[in-house]
Length: 450
Image 1 (cartoon, rainbow, N blue to C red):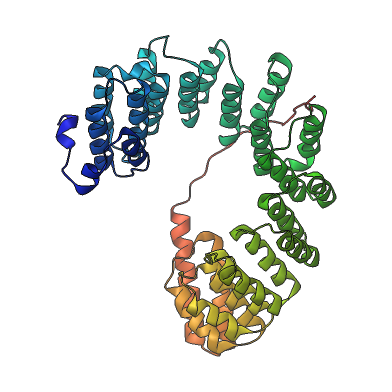
Image 2: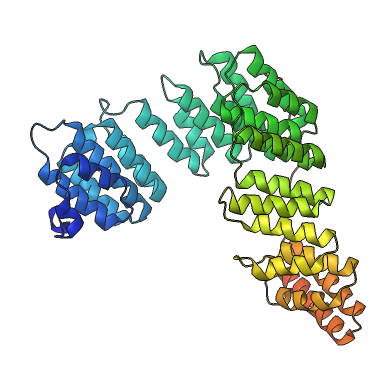
């Protein structure tokens, strides 16, 4: 079916007259059929006096919902139109089509890249192709393509660096970064450094590299962007250096909600609940609007410190003043606050009235408290709910907890039933086990960055 055949005589399309209105509507389109209709109508209404890049912008806007549809035939159909219209001569159109193909078929994306004429194939297009290769599991091909780029820019280096860390190749990523600092004339930017900090955090290498990376930032006088400052605070806290995290936080010139939240999370992580609450209150006094993550951190601080009423007030503040819809994490924090304080009826009321389906973590928190405070009546209702859920291998201890609770209530038949369920789960798990012989892990020896 040709593109003009997708036109419909709907009220929305007839109400849009100018190309500007059509472009705005196309930019917000999420349905592929609506995007095609809007695009077709815009192409028909384009006048010779309109700027030549209008058609290219329209094609880029149309490609987004077409990519989301995950339909290779539909994308190929639009690709044919772009070829006939000579719109692939625009680099931003070629790069958008390339990105769309890379999400559906990397092989087709590579073929398209090989056919893009040199005049169109600028660094933006090249970096899109590199990003496509980096998303695959073939790191050797990605590195080979990277090495073949004649004039690499900072995006090329950042993309290849992120590729190593996203595939768990931390040592190779750090070695790659060090090679860049010595061989390339480009300086690392905040995006690269956030990538490194995140990669080191996932590999448990923060105590070794966090200060080294921070020193590199200071020596090179790299501006602390919002993400970089937040990452440093978060990484120092995870590296058990809350003192350094506090120094970074204090030196941030214009603190946003992410800086405050990272610092509050760090204090909560290290059980400095009173300091976390004090910082939260100072943040609110300064007019910084907390987000959902901020409230999760401060509610956890209340749980650690046993501050039931303060936790209740913060939850009320979140919903009523800041109009934040409670997530499963917020409800879980409230259940934990009440459960640890022995207020099991309040904890159970939270579970019964929450707008989301309670998960195993929430039920476990309640059942542990029921065992500690010997409340079998609430425990029985919780156990019945848990037995209806899928219990993963990580939560096998929950069977023992339920067995102990039934034993506490003298219901020995149910104890036997739960033990049998646990044995059946273990048997099913063992049937699916396999083993491999792994070689010795490579040592991680990366010199400090300069």
